[in-house]
Image (tube, rainbow, N blue to C red; front, side, top):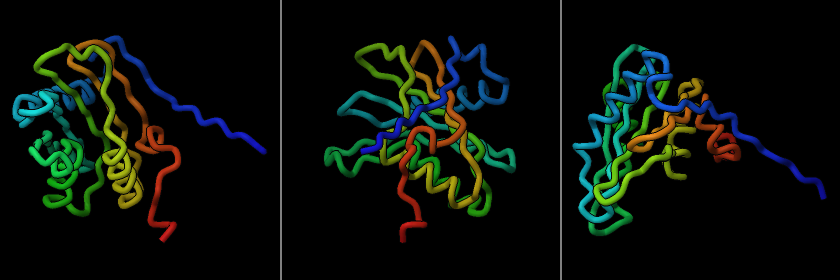
Length: 160
């Protein structure tokens, strides 16, 4: 038997002040979306901002539902909005930040598995890597260069 080891290159910043200005502004857009999230059950609010290749910023937030499988993730809300408004424009980067009403989240929160797959599909669709900037409410910021870094064995249309 042969074993493979996958490693994930992650840029780690002590806080957003160390980020490039473009990334810092995108994270600020994501932070503004947190307050618009609807999370009455988990109290876990997520805000996302996408930077598109045309310079537009598209945002989204999570929307919970009492029937949990019906919840809408912030990443998918933003990607859906971007696809509707700018179907032929690639996403260049995505910033995600979170807030919990009952505790402090002091470490970066990455996209869930489903969202990682959706982001990966967007990379394939536009043949453009999407950098992902992740932050909790406070604390360090993580950045990866591609969704593929967070989902190294992704499913793609090549299998179909």
